[in-house]
Image 1 (cartoon, protein in one colour):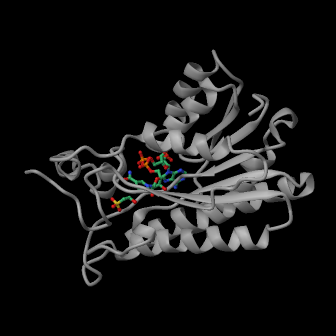
Image 2 (tube, protein in one colour; image 1 turned 180 degrees about the vertical axis):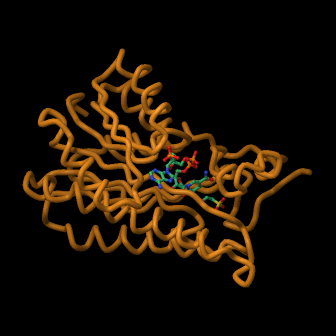
Image 3 (cartoon, protein in one colour; image 1 turned 30 degrees about the vertical axis):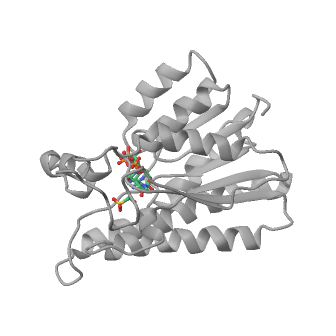
Length: 253
Ligand code: NDP
Ligand code: 8X3
């Protein structure tokens, strides 16, 4: 891949997004890193500016106006975006459907589904005009198979799966690649967020087996974006060795 490409990565302050930003930067991709936690964006920008051009965009993907404003504020030398990594997202809570909190449901659907749509909507016109671009949607094994208490998180990721297919169909013939990477269990801040800062409970999720690391997913994203122009990775699911499905994980403890 020529190293003069520009990528925008949502959810770059942590986990999969941050690992992807680092790998892209190491490979000379100019990056736009996004997230709500500005201090983290600043820190990552300082780290990566030594090896590539970086700009930061600080916005909540739920805020439609702010998303539009942020994308419009991108300076001209960064505005031809070649790669969009739709990664921002989280699970909020792990409850049966009768015990779920409506505010958690709102957060998951607003961030994981509507946020992804708002960002895509703001970036697509430029890709369509240039008949060029690559959108990678970060789905999940939770978007392929529902697990107990996963209900609304799984629904949000099933929606990402549907949108990934829909985008690919609608953008077919317009020169834009669309594909999803669907990870299984990856040790990030995901479970800390899901369990609202209960780190002990979060850590237990990844005990007794070797989960994926965010860098493993970054590697696969890099593979997807470095295929020849005629090759599109449409839908790729990746699990660690010890995971067999959304519900089957070989824990030794
Ligand atoms: P992290 O919690 O480590 O990272 C989540 C990222 O999303 C953060 O950078 C966070 O930034 C950003 N984000 C969350 N809410 C918002 C918001 N409202 N507006 C803007 N940015 C937001 O989790 P992961 O890296 O694991 O998750 C990344 C993606 O991978 C998610 O879509 C998740 O569903 C998916 N995934 C994760 C798996 C896992 O096991 N970890 C497995 C399968 C899929 P900030 O808080 O600064 O805004
Ligand atoms: C994240 C994977 O299984 O924790 O999408 O929901 S899981």
